[in-house]
Image 1 (spheres, rainbow, N blue to C red):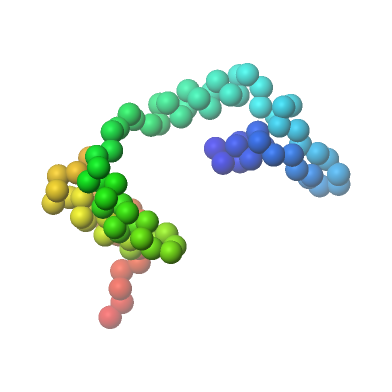
Image 2: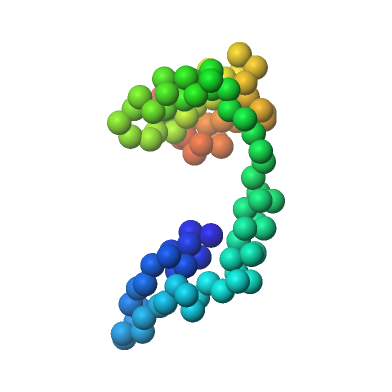
Length: 101
């Protein structure tokens, strides 16, 4: 999807001077497909004020995005009943390597 977005928004030069043109790459059918895919992959969900506070506390407060901060955010949401899905192994989900002793 990111490559499709890039080709649909930006002009670029490929190979030996071959230029991409977004208007020729993304037509009405491609745009309709992307919108339909996005709608099917997303759910309408209202975030609570508390979820935003936890996000700010654990994730946004950091200078850089780190999986460890997302883990702290997720772990803070669970006891408050705010986690909408269950993730059995959050470390695996976030790609956090187990600490070696």
